[in-house]
Length: 98
Image 1 (tube, rainbow, N blue to C red):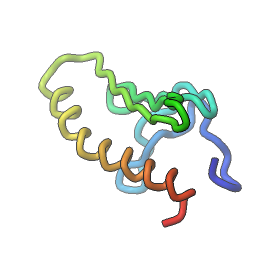
Image 2: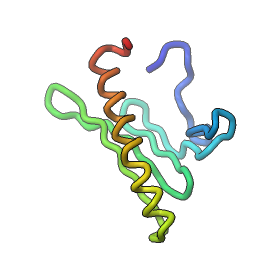
Image 3: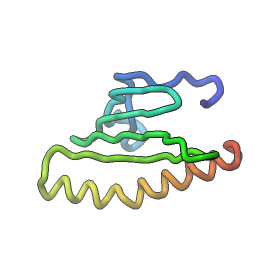
Image 4: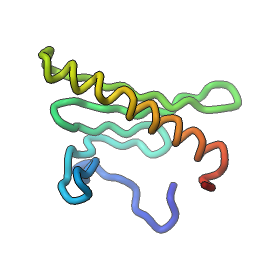
């Protein structure tokens, strides 16, 4: 948990576009276990899974519509999600130090 910052709650904004516009909403939170949010017609769930002495962070993205825009969103999000998960892993391994 980040110091001096409140944890996310259902209904909170999930992300920002251009640093100003709220995009998506937090839908469900179980501290230390999972966070699910909706954004641009998709649901994104981040789940912590115990794996022996360590923990895995999994990301699942579900899009209700099967159309060209949904496919493009999924493919476009893949590199960003990979970078995000790698950054989170690095921060977790170093205790949040940059």
